[in-house]
Image 1 (cartoon, one colour):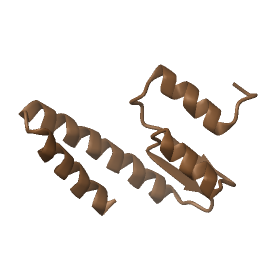
Image 2: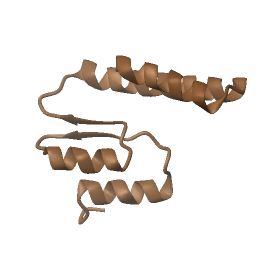
Image 3: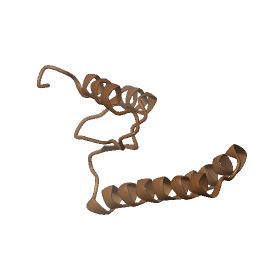
Length: 93
């Protein structure tokens, strides 16, 4: 999709799979770009300069979030409990 912007690509990906984790890495992203990307549910928006440990920590946190959410669903906890667990995890990101 060479003629689409990053946000347009993101919209197309979300049409296909609304759940897939997406990390945007950009050399010159603006706050407006970041806000638009977060609106479409990206896992994270990383601008230069960045380091490998930042990317790894984003991936690990996302996988932990996914694993934790699946565990909570299987255990049959109430929605409020899942939201509290997610909120607690997000606060340490």
